[in-house]
Length: 309
Image (cartoon, rainbow, N blue to C red; front, side, top):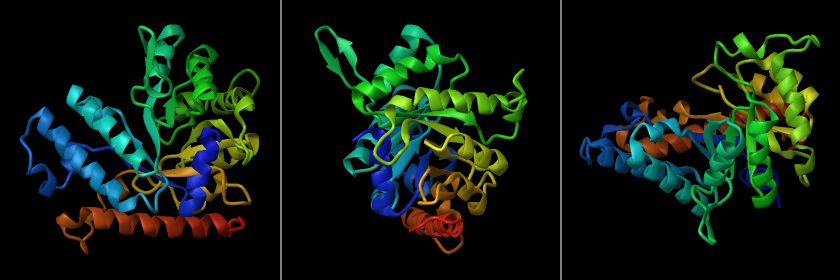
């Protein structure tokens, strides 16, 4: 079973097309967690690990995947990377799919090095060792086929997947992504066509490729346009909730069977404990409640659009 089929299987099992973004900014962590540890890099990493594990424990049966953003771990140095690895390993032990949001994009041996670290294995003498060993990563394709090819090769070899930036959710994305080429099409459409081409050899049983795309919820017209352009490309859809993406807009990225995308929510899940009906100590309970609310809202919008449950 290839990577995208594994992800779709988990989405079907949980009846939930969402991924929990784990972006543990220190100021967002509840004090009932951070107060247990010293305000050092090591202490902060331990607080992150406790917090992440408790959120995973509260949601692994209702959310198919997590998406840790590497920046919020790298900023704490080696201790932060240890927390990243432990978080990924723990989620996989709980049966969740792990999408590492690393947005790498380089050429040649550098791209191979990144791919070895996250998707493949690192050779040490005569042995090969998996390092972070996640299921998917995010890729920036700005340098073209040269920077994507090593990741695709490891996807084939190790049954992994990548989500390639096509149309991102941030406000200034149009400065580059909406520029029209000499062919009269926007750059995000050019990138989408490349993603389709790159993914042709990795289409799974559900009709989608493990070479997938990042398409933001904050641009619904473009989301719908890209879906029509790339019917066999799965979408990672950021921008829901705190960034303003609405469920009815997100539904435009899905097919008639309710498949086609996985929606990321980070702050809305991680900070659910700040809602007045919860105490700080109930942060995991609050995240589960918000995850269930989100699931219901998204499924309603997706199936009202015409999906068959």
